[in-house]
Image 1 (cartoon, rainbow, N blue to C red):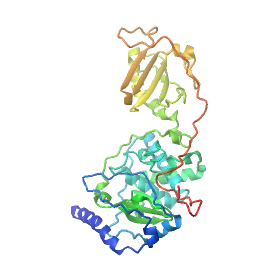
Image 2 (tube, helix red, strand yellow):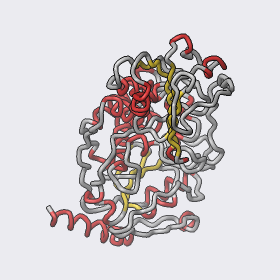
Image 3 (spheres, one colour):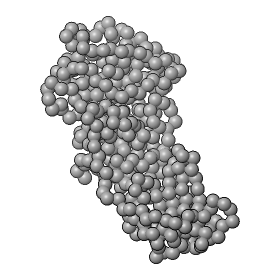
Image 4 (cartoon, helix red, strand yellow):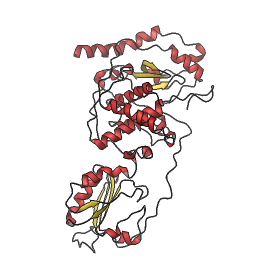
Length: 407
């Protein structure tokens, strides 16, 4: 096996130089416009994942250029099967993130969807990328020009697939998470449509063509099977952008697992219906009815409900009549709150506070403030807006203008 892997690695290093000499000639007018950076990362240096920048070519010139680049020679092994190891909630989140990538990148095309899904899972097991499915799909979505998959930052998520189309995409994702492999794209970690030429394409091995998409792997050791053995995480994050499409990613649904966690808490503690948006800008919030149980057990209950989230707010009442039922709290409800737990790991904050009129405490800093301010209800859902200039993997939509690169 070591000999086989060594042979693959050697051919991956040597083949690009041989292919460059045999590549078909690119018309001079097109070649003059193309910048061809090429750098092979050594095995001890993880390659950099860069935002996509496009060469200054028309769609017609880009197609001519892409057609002149030969496919890599030598071994092109299929990826190893991937099997998701998380619990049901984590699996549901991973499935919907993967299905979103499949549908928004490839439309309702099962072959294209399988290719996209395979690229996501290849990235998942490569140390250059995030180690969760949702992390890979939504990498860079918080930056206007940094998203790796265009649909995560251009406002495309405001339109939804039909229910049958969404279910078909979820089936493709489910099969991939259970070990299905789309062998044709091998260990590809990048792709783009044939009417654009990203700057990075000259540094990668061209592996396959699926419809209008071209698939690439890293040149050198980082494109060999040995590089795709990173331990992944099943701690799938909640993606608020998927909330309107996926129940497990809704803001209130972000805490569905708290119901399960709190079932193991001391007897007499029950979780109230989650009030989505109760605290504007803080979706990871839980309201709880603390019916019985010693006050000293409330911190453990809160931590169980918050799980591993870096930011969480737990608010508890012993008086059922004071429990908020809507998206805002009245001053009276705030004044009668029995216990709160706040966590913000980025700010180094973790605090447990009691209503000391109800539960007298002896230590400093354990009592809630007596003065409270009502929290206003949110006025509406945020409007998703895409940036003017987009980076990321190109979707398969044809360019609108024949003289303008896809965006």
